[in-house]
Image: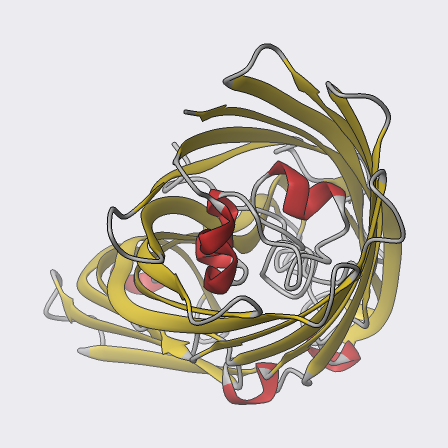
Length: 403
């Protein structure tokens, strides 16, 4: 389910955090990273797992503010709920100052479904775009000395996309509706990280994530071609998406045994990851149809600086409270905005708690508010002063066992 469902993500098409503690501290995880989510935040943090640990988490997104507003429409998206999941296992290695692990993470995505949109061609039709990314991450971290730890992961990234745009509408020589499905890809990637403990109170963190191209191929498409009828193209490719290069730095401060404060700055190179998205349809099942169709949609995203602040307070021996804030300016140029992309969110507030059930088990839960963000732009399809609005909240939960 997590592989096939999109996430209306937050820092562009990425989530603000991975695993419950990372997310509930607002994504300020680079210098903290102390559970198996370190495999996707800062792998150097794995060394803080001194025995064996298993984490499983799930989240539900409730969209409250995902809308298409223009001269003909004031419509909320029909897919109001999205599920995502992940988890990991890690254990310390005997006779080595190292910890190894493997994790599965819903990395992010974007998309919306509008079942009843008034089109510029006088019809009422459907439009949707569902793009999801997941990864498997085996990795290892080692304690170099009492202060320094380093880690690295190799990831297997899977992405898929499903799209439809006014499929039941066709205007000869002007517009052909379509449905795209089945285009996906599997690509490798890697991340490295460092944590350095200055003293008993301060820890610094650094992580680097390499760009991963995501060329989506192997799909099929139905194109409502008017005079030619519905044409099935048996070779569909969509190229121009990538997981971006990232550089994160962070610091964590423990003023006493109860408090943990953390901050992170993450640079995300969207300008090199999402520029032009090219869709190519080939191999039609109708000889009278065009042998190849191609569209190029300029995206030209901006680089993004994400700022995260988090706090953890140990209320008692069994209970820890969390709070966080995450801000990243919308990387999508105004003229390339779309309610289908839904990647415009900027601010997030998180609150939660962890509770030890016994000496081995712990449950962590909380809420993440995606503060509403409205963008007004001029659309070639929907006209002047079109609005794309987005907002909602996540419910997060993670069950952990350490033994």
